[in-house]
Length: 145
Image (cartoon, rainbow, N blue to C red):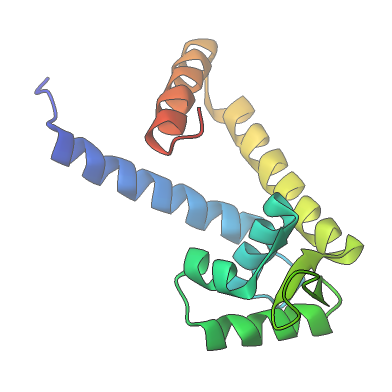
């Protein structure tokens, strides 16, 4: 068996991860009518507890104007709360509401359940051990550990 070079491995990894994410999104349908960027924005605020709109725009790689529309929609739906900054009244701090947390947690839980079921049904013990090691490497690639 021919050894793959880094470029070939990167291409294979990109395809597999993209496909996995797409399948999870398909399998774990959300009744919410939120776009990927809106769900991602909710996830970021959930993770960081509070953020400035400009920080969110930079993280999501959208314009400040687009992020303002996203925040307004999520705020209108009751998922985010906008509060004037105590340090600078011209700035707004964005936080997640209880309803927003519930959406994020439900989506994550459903995704994790689907993935756990898939791992249980489609892998043997040796493959599970290999997957556990691969997760450590992937976490290293994205600086999680």
